[in-house]
Image 1 (cartoon, helix red, strand yellow):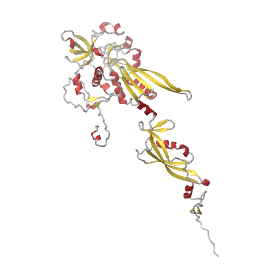
Image 2: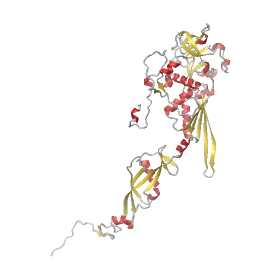
Image 3: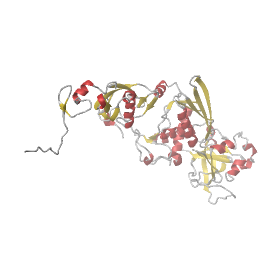
Image 4: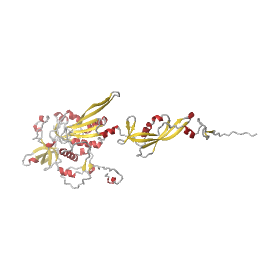
Length: 503
């Protein structure tokens, strides 16, 4: 009698599909995968083609309901933005995986490959993979639309300086260019005594005001005007105005300090020369070489004005010059300048060479002057000084002449100047001869003052050859090591037109 032994390895049984009769493993629906997919489409309701808005000007994508976000191609941020466009249909299925399918960057198409799962007949879970095509449509965002309009602004900064020279504005313009603070401006308008900066948002204007407070001594006032309001949503539309006033002192001005301020600065003499205006007013006493720095808050607490008009500068010729070695310092005196040398000079006006009238003065330019040199200065002895502080000073303490700087041949300096500066794109009227003269004065100040030059981007002018001769009367010049190469990129940097690109 034979006994049949039951096999130990049991394999699951197979059933036939109720639709096509193919042997399959048992499942809750008793249908094969092919028949189940033909009967049920779990991606139904999910759009296969979606449009997405893109601003070409600022390279941002539109995220409903009203924001624009910066996203790189095939980034996680862009993938999240694409999935939010079909968020409602995707809530009915389970999202397993999502990723980009590579497309040409200029095809205006984004393809996202989705893997989803959903429970179908009798608890069976079906998984499906499909691609959603996103069409990138160009649409200008609101910010770029306002920029293109050039007439719409929400904030304006009115920068003013009650001075007769624009040296401070020329210096401020170079600082704005160096740090890129002009990028968010809608428009820059130049007027007689200042500049107007227009912005599309108040935050950009506030950032600019903070920059001005860090670079030049100034103060500001803010105001706003109501344009429109919506009482239902409680929203208001304002236009803001920031009025920035720069101290009315420029480089090479002769000033008279108040007695209280002069005492607080180390008993400095009241008659001083402004040698530089940066984040503070830098003064030097031509009689003792004592220096002092005055910030904006100190100036507005103890204000003072320039004694002479820039056009009152006169040309003198040095007749005799001697260096003062031993400088007597009083108790509590402040710092002494190490870059200047105290000298005693006899000068004579070039317009009075036919006479024998000479002037004696002390100057901080002792290291530059020699007999026969030309120097620019103010004749205080024959000038009508209308200042409240000067009127209270003993006439013996007011110098006859205050020398400002050594004079060189301007035509020769312009011809040998092998560098240039960039300028802001601003709306302005035609530059008159006085503005051109003031701009040349600023360029000469850059050549003479290394401290100011460090904060300015100076570019080499390739149109002017580098001269090797030194017949320039010793005029200060900027070395090639301090210059930057001006980069010009043509339209096609890889073709024939780009071959002439200067690097």
